[in-house]
Length: 530
Image (cartoon, rainbow, N blue to C red; front, side, top):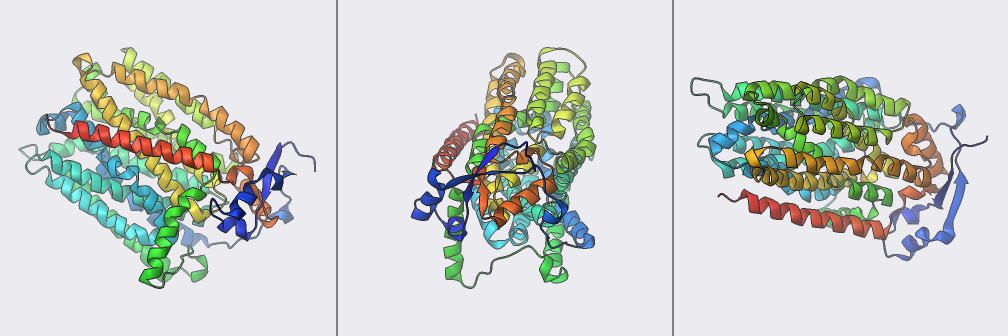
């Protein structure tokens, strides 16, 4: 059958290549140009070419997905009550805007590196096992944050947010590790979309209830805005343990996610060292996307965490009204995010949304920062950017990997990049705001708009790499993409984009290290009381 796809470089892939490590003769041989072959990929497969797979009954999939989605409900709620309370916390704790940025980015501090370790361990021991420990960390973090309200202790609040952040990041990776097992090849994009949509629902509730919770009682004790999320985090932890029981006691063995066995303490230590080394097995396209996206998530987070305070500063809106208005930007994504995920599953074209989302953000920030239009206009427009801000990358990371074996490590490195970028942008934006006359956001908007202008060019760049290295896998619907990938594996071949590159691994690790050092330096400097 004639093909419209470009010639895609492929390598012969045997068992030795999958187990080879950088520096070994096998790995170098597999990467050499002499052994590369080109195979013209057909646009699709005939019905008889589809690879049979174990079909998990719907009742098990629905039960699993509901419980997995509920993993992060409590910690998401706890993390998003801080934004609407910025003005209140700055006043109650007697801190600067930069110090509030330290609080709001505290969860990103430990998550600049630890998700990599956590992701590798998740790959080795399974998502459900590690989720048990992360649930305990989330509860402990919210308890500390709530206790800080008793006598307005800024340092205790920072400590609680750090612990909560680490638990939340590991829990997120556990979710991302488990989702492909249940829905890869069918509705993986939809499930990621539902996950994001549910997170948006919780964010909406958090923004709507944060200020009212802080005014409960005759003394208007703001601590209720911390204690109530603490209770929801405990309930989410119960869902984690319920899933573990379901997976190991109720689910038939043939449907369970694979778990390697650990036979002794010695083998556990040895396997732990091996999983840490798995970072060098990540493919080059994956590293390129990480490096080029390093500060983009942080730029968006500056807006999301400060949108209520921006209204107070630029439009004179009351704190409570600003909190309600800010919550509106999460309404549309609740409906459209799953639709976007379903679009990826049925149609494809994931990278188109990278550019369109960036252009929408530029429009939003221009209206909010440099005009006096009703603030509801940029808030409502931003909701459309919010729909496609995250899900294209969540749906893309699994495609950039040759198999699910490194899923935890890949999402761990991605989380580390995003958290390091968020840490840098959060603290830097707070410092810039402090030095702006009237503590306005004009200079902050200029900075984040510049980053999004650069991001607008990355969508076409990724699409070009996709065509060159992955045969336009990122354009394909999920079933067609999965079938084509499995067919290549059966032929003993793989996409060039799934190859490892020592150069891009070195660049990726170096950039991440520099971001971590920069973020920690900014954090330490601005967390000091003045």
